[in-house]
Length: 330
Image (cartoon, rainbow, N blue to C red; front, top):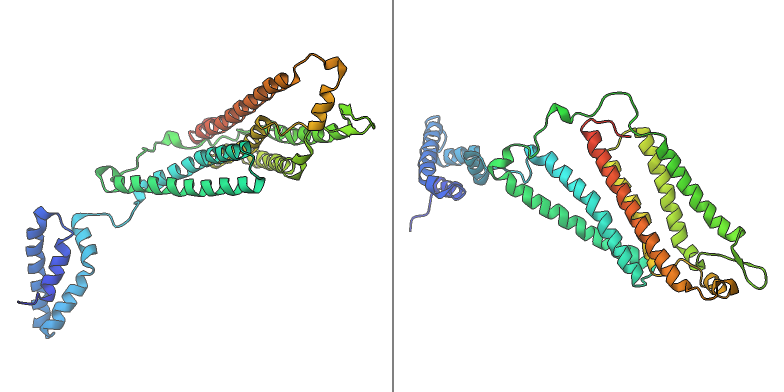
């Protein structure tokens, strides 16, 4: 059995990456080209074995050389599709992660999980979701990259996509007023229900409306979210224009506030049991089904909070989209 020469081994390594219909032609051309190069080097005084090795080394890695012959991409996502890939990844992560996290927090809260367990569960699901989104989007773009569509961006650019350059502020001072009012209003109500109680017990001590257990975690958390929303409003006002990043941040903050509040309302964890008991004991309220009234009120409030949060999130996305197309956004 004859041992293949270095040249034949190299040719075999190259043509295995070539479409079968072209393999014979490529092998013959490559064999002739190497033979000419080797003969020239031998004629220049180089030993034949060394000349053969040098000629093959000059051509380089056979897989890379085969890719150069067929035009196959040597990257996962090329420059033509890179920005489309990045924009889609950021958009999906910004929209889906808050929704997934909100769903997990709502489910965990409704089942009575501890706050730490809720946070860990939401974090784990968010990480898995982010990995899944990044993986599948990359797979799709890798397939597109290796087709005719991969040679051009998926979304054609035009001068109409340029952002506005006029000096008019696209975000007014109302965003700052809203951020400040939200924090002041909630903080004021928290203090008022302690110092200006609606009900007092037999000893004259105030009975807070809110359940005392909320102070161990949820009230500080919600105040922190409101502070974050105020910071967000300041950043938005300073930028004077909505961007995709700000729209994503708006969704995250809206979900971070709305989902826990809705979950707490639906699990009847907001009202202080002592307040409810004192209220039920009032003779002037005899004959009124307070439980049914509260259930209707709680569901109504939860729905309103959910609708407002969804509307605010959608509004940020729409304004970011309009701003990216150069339209004024207030």
